[in-house]
Length: 101
Image (cartoon, rainbow, N blue to C red; front, side, top):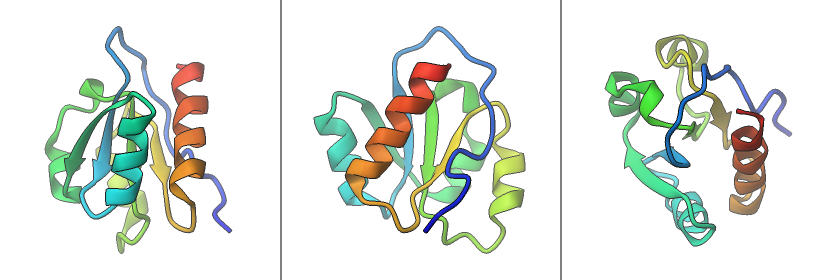
């Protein structure tokens, strides 16, 4: 079971519900698209290099060796750890996070 799925806090922004999802999470990407989210499939290094304000949420596999370092590098955007979660559970986490911000 995963604890602390939502890892960091977003400063907020006035943009659509755009979600960055780690590229290997194809079932999560598909489910989020079906739920009406704009989804960008990115490699972890691309997530780190992207502008975190461009996304409402980032979803990672949780398989990163140094997840805390990753979180620190994508400041100002919520990061959801999808490890052990179904696509539906990830979608629920995304919906809850987007509503908060």
